[in-house]
Amino acid sequence: MTGPQSDDRVVPLRPRRPRADNDNRNVDAPEQSVGDLRRFEAPEDAPDDYRHRMVVNVLALLVCIFLVGGGVWIATTMAQMRKDQDCVLSGRRGCSPVDVPVNSRW
Image 1 (cartoon, one colour):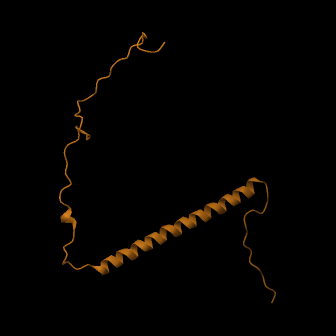
Image 2: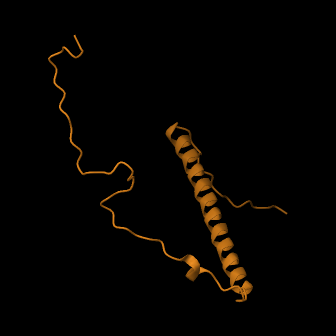
Image 3: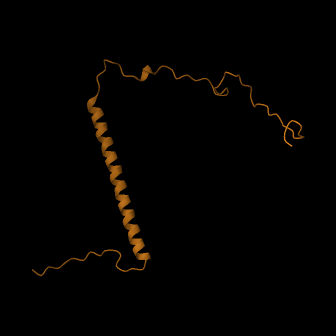
């Protein structure tokens, strides 16, 4: 029987720290403010340095191209190695190509 007449006991748990009902922030964390972000803004009358921006953009593009090219190279190398390993492990011969110079008679 489970109800008010039951012999089961309910142990009330007490909270670890007191909390106000309307306070949802962490009491243990120190108060920090973001402050004014205007110090990070450029002045309105300051000229933009387009040359520097374009150089940085070109360098970023080159890095991205290098990363994509490296990824494609690694992926194709891994695929070729897997293909060669599958060929060898299946017991076939002549799995890896051998470059032989062709002699011309003419």
